Image (cartoon, rainbow, N blue to C red; front, side, top):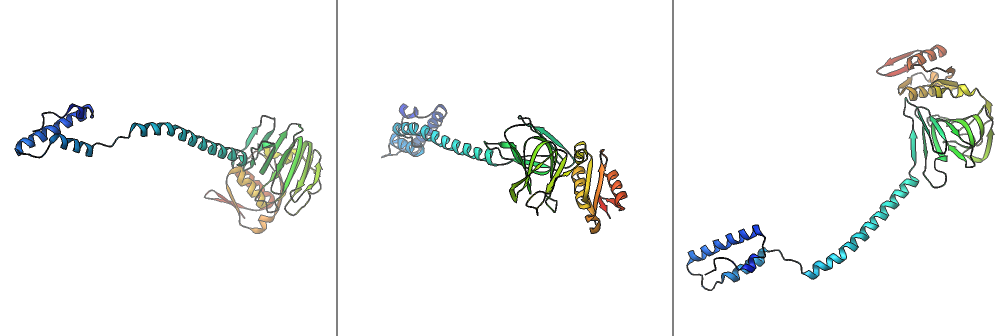
Length: 313
């Protein structure tokens, strides 16, 4: 007959709560043995040990555990170091080669200044981008739209590229205008003071020096900039005080400028009206309806507003 309690060595292999379960199982087995009356040929102790081996998870040997403890940290550190190198390399590639972008949303203006004293003002809907490389960073940037620059005199060149032109300065105040929706791809440079050189991207070695108070432009069809022309810089930079200055500009481009400034949609149904050129100077800020009324007065057109859209005809 089985003893009243299992061997103490067996019990020690279980935790306090598990010991209670073991004792309960052992008691049920003892009672079953008593009820059977005769279990000849069966040794409860041996049967219990056999059952224990079946239900107890196999434990690793001390040698296996210690071996894993010695090798695991080294492999873990190597894996972490490899992942850190990959992440660092990926971050460095992203940091150096993914362009940085600053823009002025439609209906707004943006002004910012770098630590080296370069200051930029962006007209509505304009954007500049540059790569954070180790050589010149933001001193070589690309412009979409219109921007006014103030660049302190320095030996390090400052370069502005558009879709058709390259502008190089050493210290000056100037304005660059170049919209991607311009069918001619025109870039217009206006110099306030200082020294600026401009060239077409088609022939970058043919640079033209611009004098203060003059304007120059290049488009998709020119290998060299046109002849510099004297301009009224206050009119040319009217946008900085939220005004407008259009000099022999097609109505389609005038509408695009108003759309960016007022974040609206202007539709010109008449093709002849779209191509009609407009010269007008509006130095003071005004609401869109007032400007549309002025344009219609000058061009003898009409307008209508339907569901937030302005129609010119």
